[in-house]
Length: 157
Image 1 (tube, rainbow, N blue to C red):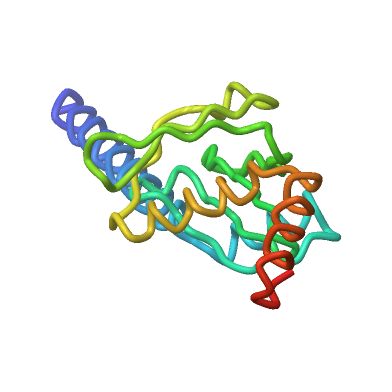
Image 2: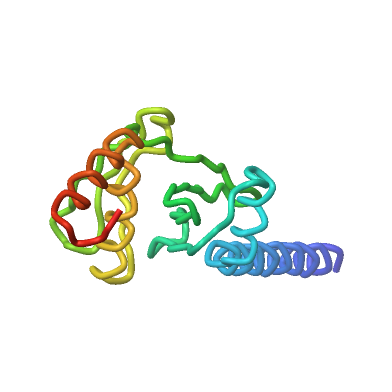
């Protein structure tokens, strides 16, 4: 009789453990695509930077942040927290992936964050890569580009 009781208790403990781990995985998956949490975490890390837009990768493990002063930021999801990184001009390299929906990024200041990032669409990947390329041009080079435009007489600065 006691063997039957202990067997039932063991099955119930295993079933409860399985159910709890499945619920935890589902909650983690939902948290990975939570843009609100990403905004809060980036705001904590860089309180003086104003966020213009966010783009989350297809897996939800990374978020690229466009800031109002034409700078860019990057966040990597580590489950319970994000690692935030402000990308300095000239300190990033971007190379396209073969699928057209992503690119490989080398962060020269944070090599642990470098890797392949795939987005849900090619348009989204192109937009983020343009931010990074815009951030790649240093302030001195932007001034030179602005001067070239005013010499052409088109009114752009």
